[in-house]
Each structure stands twice: as structure tokens, then as C-alpha cells.
Length: 392
Image 1 (spheres, rainbow, N blue to C red):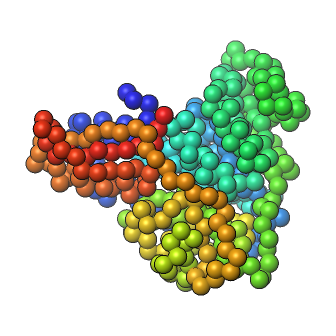
Image 2: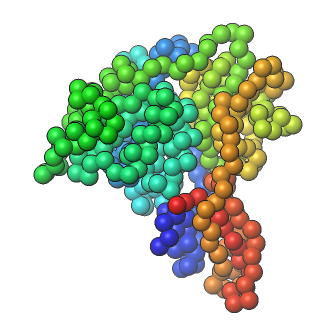
Image 3: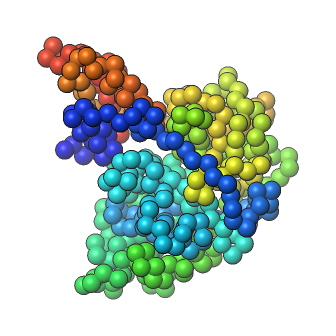
């Protein structure tokens, strides 16, 4: 099998058997909105000023325990039940089936009077562009290394991504509960390759929960608060680090507020599309489902939707700002268009099924704007598509 995005490989497998998932669930998200029942009133989110916020990511090689650790942190902060075995941050069907993280996911936790925003990033090399986009929203990162595997290639790539982004890095050795692991050897590897001090390295088991509470304290102590100015004269600006498509709400944007306040009913524009103006329909945070709130303020991470119909209408990595306010506006990061590196030809096994397959391909593209698709034809296979994917 070609080494490109696994979730597209799953699509090809489904297409080859010509088994179609129902249109309303095909690789797009039916987002659930839940009531917030914790002891945090929606109106009190404004009390979480930047000094009480920590935005962090978990980065690691594939299968080193990122999603397991994420769920354990959610359990410790009472976001999900302690006996839950569901992978809460893996929402795409391929993520649940293959046990991998494809899209970056986020969840807001509350711990010791602090707001902790976790961004669970992919570990597979083919999704490295997802990691880089997400790190822009973070002040620090947890670098996870499995004790049974040690430092792998993607561990090094992820470390340098975080290092170049000037993030505070918390080194952690995971899976210390496994038999016949040489923890001292892994610890020396991390000291030699990454110049960590021995006392900086935490040793945990995400599976059993051993020493995991120490991670939450380390996040508060070692990761700096968002370095954004919280001034009244600063109008609203935010950085978009991910998006997904929902059949009810359209494109849902994940963003971090750099300046000002985002409220429902505001008129907003995008730096790379200053012609169109959108009205904000809803704002909120993920806990881990969508929880609406009155507003998001400086340093906070959350979601919004404003009636955008297609992911092609926005650019992930763009800067969003309050409509009509363009004074000294600068984008928070330069945007380079992602170019596909792997191409595949898709053709229906029966020409009569072309329209159904066409609809399925369109739905697939709704959740990933990096996919390029154009119609193609073959003298042997008939009418089909040429699809470009991100991969290596």
C-alpha cells in the first residue's frame, strides 16, 4: 500500500469494494453540542485571563500513546468518566478504526483554577503539516517517547518543529509499566539528543495512570501563558489552526484568540479574503464536545462557525479579524499553499455508479481542503477522478 494518508487508503478500500457509507456520515462530522455541567459558568470564562491559561500540544511518534495520555488527562480533570474506554479525541471514522490520530483535536480542561487547552496532534509522518499548524496556537508541548520503542524518526522531527517554534517542551517517557523496558537507556537518549536534564524528564504510564497527575502540574509550572496583549484598544484578531465540516453548521473553525474578544453576532473577515464579511453564528469551546459560550477572549482556544459552506472558502492558518478594522493588521503566520505529493486515479467499478461515487468523493473533500480533485477519463476504466493527497 502506498505510504500516504491512511484515512484515504481506507476510502480507496471502501471504493474498491463499492461499499458506501450513508451520505450524512461520510468522512464529515455530525457535531454534537452538549450542555456544560461542570462548576464553570459560561459567563465566568472571562475570568480566565492569559496568565491563567496554558495552551499545549502532545507530540510523538505514531503509537507512542498520545491519544491514551490525552484521554487520561481528560479523566483526571473530570471532563470524561474515569472508567471510560472510548477515545474521545479521535472523531473521524478512520481514527477510531485504525487507532491513529489524523486531524488535530482540542479540548479545554479546568484544573486548579487554570484553563488548560490540549491540542492532540497526529503522530504519523504523513500528517506532519497538521502538527506544524497546531503548534502556532501553543505555548508549549509534551514530547512523548514510548519506553518500549525509544526515540524514533518522527520524535526527532516533532522535537525540531516545537524547538523552532520556541515552545517550552516537557519530556515524558511513557509505557513504563511494560515488561523488559530499559527506562535508563531511553532517558540517556533524551538527554543526549535533545539536551534535556535528567530531572526534567517525567516517567509515566498513560495506560495505568501512574504518575500522570504530575504532568498537569508540570504544564502549569513549565509552560508559559499566552504571550498576547490584553488591551481594550486591541480589536479582535484570531489565528485559525484547523477546521472541519459539519452538515448542519457548515465549516467549523478552531482558533486561538490573539487579541480582543469574539462574540456571537459579530461581523468578521479573513486576512486572505477581505471581500466577504461573515456573521458569527456561534462561539464556544470543546469539552470535549462543542459547548457554546457568550464569548472567547485573549489567549483562549475554541471554535466558531459563521455559515461558511465549503472548506475551500477559507485557508487554515489565516488570520480572522473584526470586519471594518484593518488598522495595522498583520497575519500571524505566512501561508504556503499545501501541494499534493501523491496522486491516485479513482474509477467506479460500474459506470452507472458514477454519480453516487462522485457524491462520496465530494463529501470526502469537505473535511480536508488540502485534497485536490479533478475529473479524469480512461479508455479502459471510463470516467473517474484524479485525486491528489498530502503524503510522503
